[in-house]
Image (cartoon, rainbow, N blue to C red; front, side, top):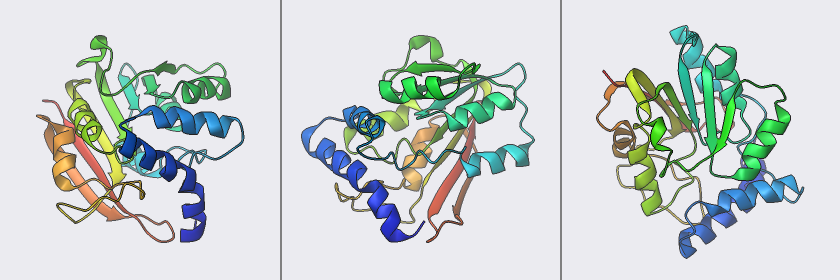
Length: 227
């Protein structure tokens, strides 16, 4: 996807993110975006119909097997990553703050073993604390702006069970303190933000790499473990 096409796909999402940044509506704009897409008025730029390729690559490299294990997918959208992990044998819970996204994920995956739930990362159900062998987050922090971003980063590690793993995939930056234009979502994660996502978990790896998009994007793929 070229720059012009990507900008066109992201235009409405950026408008809503900028409005949220100025109004204090921290996460409600996600439901607006999904509802507008459901009505055919726009598109969800990250809903591309396939599981995250960097998750797939990691799973193949690690020979991931989920039988007898639980996985949590953060900000699951329409469920592509959740369905991929379910195919690997995990008992998957997947959540999103947008009810329309959850309703569509359930509708588009009839008979799925995935438990789809409407929930908020910064106020998750208490029963999720320390409950999952794998917690996977991709691209849900980078559209957040302001105080909610810090709260979301601090919450990411809490559902990881003893011996479990947190895997984070995100846009990356080399800048330690980047200026963030409210009109130019997504806002890449700094290394310090990535470390906050891991909390007190042990950092297993923090890969910063260029993907194969056109033009290439700088990404993080970071693995943390609760020993």
